[in-house]
Image 1 (spheres, rainbow, N blue to C red):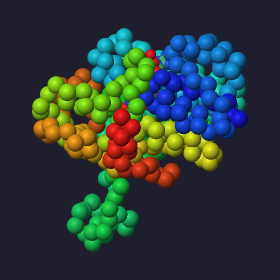
Image 2: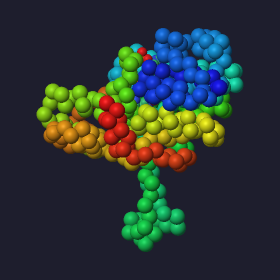
Image 3: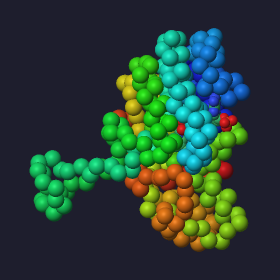
Length: 309
Ligand SMILES: NC(=O)c1ccc[n+]([C@@H]2O[C@H](COP(=O)([O-])OP(=O)(O)OC[C@H]3O[C@@H](n4cnc5c(N)ncnc54)[C@H](OP(=O)(O)O)[C@@H]3O)[C@@H](O)[C@H]2O)c1
């Protein structure tokens, strides 16, 4: 049995990881959250992890208040500690204990302006030549694309990525976006977009929803299963992009949600500038997974999520 430590076990992703790994008898799961370990304390991290001596560490702990850390200096410092420095401590502790580390990051390490690929053989930038006619480029960000964080939260996540890469080799760094899943028990856990929509629909007849920001949803149980698959199949260490298949605007997401839920509510598409949010958001933020089989379409995942209540 592989001793597997899951940190952030009370969060949306953490609790899905616990469920998936606990079902497999090959893994002995130890589930920790903030009250068991504070990952921002370097000495505590080394002491507790060395004592436990796990073979695998899954770090699902994170600071996710994107707007708070953009506008508040103290929150930004906290975000840098949790998302930036702590993954480096975990990487060193994992290395010392010869453990594999899985760490999760975000599409916000990119700027939301992916380069548009040209068909091979086309030497000029055009949209009408014959080479373009059958060319269906995958537009989005590949695992090794240039990173350029869109906001302060993205900066803190990138710092975490760099600290993991600097401190060890046996890591899986998995980027995801727009996470949803069973409501987390942890106090500060980030509410998913779908949960926010359902909550708003209890008191409002009309909802304005942004339709000019495109991205990919990630269903926590699907990501958890894929994480185990990556470990089980001993995939090469490195960066992975794991999101559900297909992309959508927030407006598309809301439409699908209320249609599946058979809820009658008016949804009005609006531009992102209709809302003033402290942190910038990407207009086009599609994570391209070029290393593993794709996850199912986000609509199927959402259907299952709603069925499970
Ligand atoms: N949610 C998204 O849409 C999204 C998008 C892209 C990437 N991600 C990444 O995916 C991962 C999982 O996100 P999530 O949404 O599942 O997070 P979450 O629900 O907010 O859960 C994070 C957990 O980490 C705990 N934690 C916070 N600070 C800690 C510390 N210093 N030491 C130990 N534990 C600590 C939290 O406890 P408290 O609640 O008590 O603080 C919480 O239980 C994170 O790396 C996140 O950055 C998430």
